[in-house]
Image (cartoon, rainbow, N blue to C red; front, side):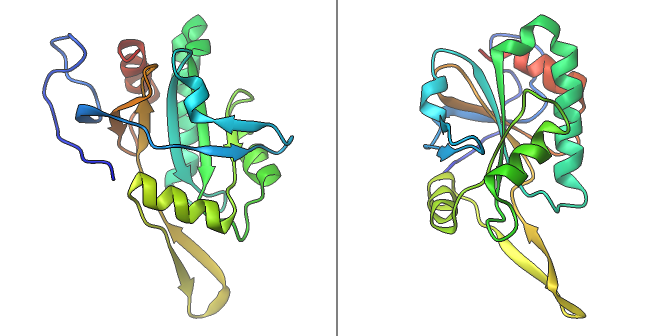
Length: 185
């Protein structure tokens, strides 16, 4: 489970980060899923290579998910050549509707560099247990086939050492995301 504490100063700078700082930084739990092309994605393989922005959401989300990925796209543009030092990973929490292909297309409509992944129900159960979050279907009584999914609303920022350094709140501007990603290595 991920425990967090807010810190006013982080990463050797006088300015605070824009999210909830995880202090002390904690090792990121495993994420090992297969993408739409059948290529395995393993968060552990990113260690020593890139900083990772990781978000748990779903493609039918009406608000937080599209806003977050749009903010990511702005952050990626703001990073310029530094954008290649960040891996952007969207993981669906709705295995009933989101296949790996659906998740990939959704993420890539915001930016072609974004990775979209969709776990099986069993894999989602494992992610919930290891990352310490829950998801719940919220069914519309007037239309039982329509539902929303409650899910974490923050982006986990994982440094190159594989440690969760901060959780960015929803609606963090692209410029603020980029500023934090420049500092977290």
